[in-house]
Image: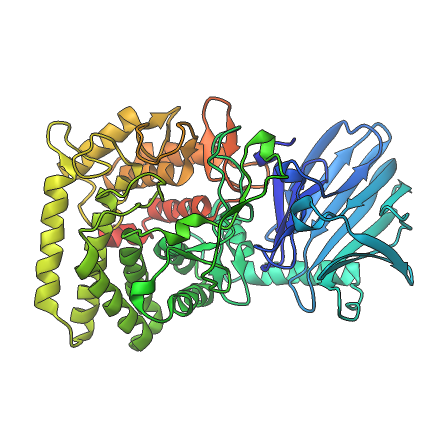
Length: 587
């Protein structure tokens, strides 16, 4: 089984596929990110598309074509060099995967083995031929294989290519009860896809430092965007483990509200106002109805029902069970989300060009009322623990953020609002957090009131403007996290207590480590900030992708992949180092 970092991403902004270094597509869900997978080899199941030399490969090199999501993999054999080009054209009628193989030098025998297994590897399709096309049917799904190479009844093919020769392979998903989709011209699709991505990248407003690294992460975020609605997924996968062989395996193919402000910051700072507004508008639609019915996450189109089930026929990535689809955290009460959504709505007021967005204001006011009523209720916190509800310090800080932002919103626009009451509540929350969430003997904020455990989420205090980075209490918290949560220079989420109700063990959380670099920068420790940021950049795989976590001992990535939160943090920290991040304004 390849390591997580051995995969690259291709996608059409409605779904995505993971391509291993050897050219095998081991994960893809059709027709949407959160649909059933037809390739499940990533999770130890059936279903993959192997394409490459049928003889031993001596070396592999790959890259994305500059400023695109077109993957080029070069595989060297004793007889020659084969280039495999993989991409998904921006969707029109149906999702397509286009694969082009070209012999660059010498002579290379090539094998294609398309093994479609629907329903997360459980359903073997019925395959038939029609007018030179192979079609795999399984209930509502049909996948059409059109290729310049003849395939057998098992969707296998072999051909030997000499220098300058190329062959094409295209699969297209379509509802099985409808007429076949029109064929794709691979060469035209390649040109169209390259133009799409280069046109998108032309809108980029780069920071003064690390411009290519930031753009690479922005392309990843664009690829994780569900284009029909503007929702941005946390990751393209489910159940990649936070510990190999462990049970911390979650479905991340949904949109988390708490990512909103950081994502908007990354998009707006990079010049992508349209994407930022689409994300904000998705958020308004998804929440809909009564603010009290707010969920912590939604489906790509705003779906609310994300029932969690376990797929017992899948052994999991490197035997990491269970494999889960859906996410039970959707039912949790997480106080911090209210503040994060209000912060997002407040932040995007600048992009509304001075015009009051009435729905945004009404939602912010409604969420503020929820905070007023419930801010002292214990919750499950940022980390969605599956242990008991607690008075998490970070959650109370974000309640403060929510009231602070709605108060600013009202004062700036001179809106009719209970300003005095909100100001008093903001002060009360601040005082309580500083009293009950702070350990005076250790000079640090703690995971929850009365706890001695640490929480890396408290690195956000200066980033959201709760306290300045040079405040002695923040400096003490940073020092405690450096001392107790850092492993190999990277930051774990929290202490190894019994807080989350799960067996111990996971990697360092990459977003938290970026937040530590932000704290260094805001506190004037610029050399340390830059060194840490560059260590994080070095963790990216050969095509610039990051997972959720890093195992400093095994030196490998862990968790779902690629992880939007990690790439958002990369963009914001790079902008922070260049003095362009909203963290400076909050601070």
